[in-house]
Amino acid sequence: SDRLAAMKSGLLGVEPARPRRALLSDTWLRVLVVGLGCAWLCTSLWLAWSLRRDPAGAASLRRSHEMTELSNEVLILRRQLASMVSDADEAAASGAGGTEPPPPPTDALGHADPAADTASRHPEFRLAMIVPWLGAELPRWFDLFVASCAGSAYLVDWLIFHEDAPIDVAAAPANVRYISLGPHGMGAHFGVQLARLTGEPNQTHTLVRLLQHAFATWPYAIVEYKPTYGDVFRDYLDGYTHWSYTDLDLVAGDLTAFVSRAELVELDILTFTFGDAVTHGRLYLRGQFAMHRLSAATSRLWLACEFLSASGGSGAGAGGGGGSGGLLHELRIKHARATRAQQRGEAFRPHFNSAEGCYSRVVATSPTLRVKYANRMIADFTSAPQVYVLLSGGGRRAAVRMCAGSEGDGTAGGLVGSPMRPTASSSAPASQRAACDPFAPPPPPPRASLLGNQRPVGALIPLVTHTNCSEWVEPRYRVCADVSGAWASELGADGAANGWNFFYLAGRWYRQRFTASHPAGLIEGALFHFQVWKRAYKRQGPQLAPIPPPGESAAFVLTKEGYRPLALRPAGGSSTGAGTGAYEYDEALASIDARLKAIERDGVSP
Image (cartoon, one colour):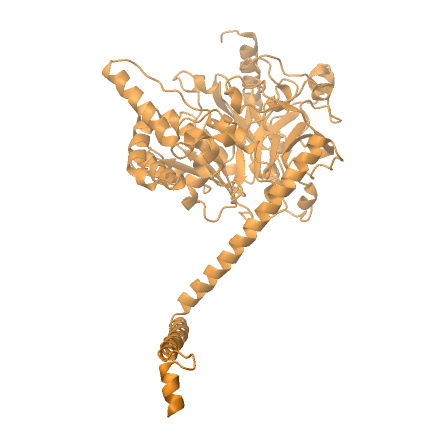
């Protein structure tokens, strides 16, 4: 009892109340730990029970974890890629050890299937050619354009968006799709989609209103948005592997014969030129054909153009320039100036941005892309006086062609600034030139292997670029090949001029010689673009021949004055030639055609 009293009185140096508080503190700590443990156990049991009853929720949770892991992997890969590009640039700048250029698309991929494909559609690839049309009336040559689209049905669909235009849907080939967006629907569709794509959904109503005004007042304004088509119309591209913007002022041959499987597999973007890439060094994506792989690599590249970007966009990816404040700012400026001009009773035509110029520059400064500029298109800038169009039907293949040796002889003044370079056929005496038969057999039936009509010759050769070309494009957007060397004027082994294609691979430029397969005496193109001739076609005077119903074979000759039909029949004049793809002139029409050519050549009035 004495000891206990001493302890209580602190004689042994022990604080009587302290052990009690410590014991109390330890008790609460134990309670807290046990409580947390129970909470974790209950939560785990509840989650397991919930996922057991909701398989979809479990799958969603797993996908969420997988996406998180995948995002981390993508981030790591992007950092590695950026490091590799940086190292490569430093090595190139320091001159320390050059590297071999990346290989171009190889045609080896196109030789696995020599047999003709009997299916009506390619089993693996599908290309959507996108055309938005604004206006109550269609171009006078629209029927010819639509009829020519049928020739590429094996690989290509044409998607024509309009606002209740007067279109005869029943007369369209199966690979031409008409999509009506309703009155003022084009502006509404672009406004909604661009607000989403630029990350400004709160500006949807404003964008819709401004775009509807712009499209109704200046229908040509739609061309400013060409690079956006693949994203704006993405909901219509299910089932397609590739897409391209295009125009209506053209006629198409059989695109299947001009696109190879290797290009579809290995390239991000393929565009067709018409010879000016060699003669004038113009490296830009053509508005008639710029095929994009439908992938993340090519999506939303156009956002780097300041006039298409979100508000306050700088457009640094397009080469700088300080920015114009973005898409919304651009549209508000146009609308305000148009309103002021209307109040003053003045005519007003706004400045239209070079979408093709800016976008081409964006592509040419994206080192991860693989891009090819292929010389496969005919245009009235460089064409012969007559261009022949064979429509598919009756077992015959489509083709767009002209006589070799008469390129650029005055139909549209040739390319501004310099004449076309002579070819072997044009420099040879007339008696030694191959006969020009517009009805020579067109390309063979399509193959699933898609061989294409060009073959590379030799290796890739580095190409020097500059910015002194394409005067109609703002200087900051220009990309030009240096074609001052003797190589640009040399004829190829096949006697052809301008036989060069250009590549942009891993951030560097290259050129490569090619040979193309054409019938003797002819030059064929995937497309014929009549940018100058259409000025005459728009008038009521030129003769524009009627077009036969889909599925009926026909042939036409196009000139700067219009187009007229040419009769065709199986070679040899018997039914045995049907379906072989061989054509010959009807003798009477051949005589008439010859006289018309003479009249056009000599300027003699009929």
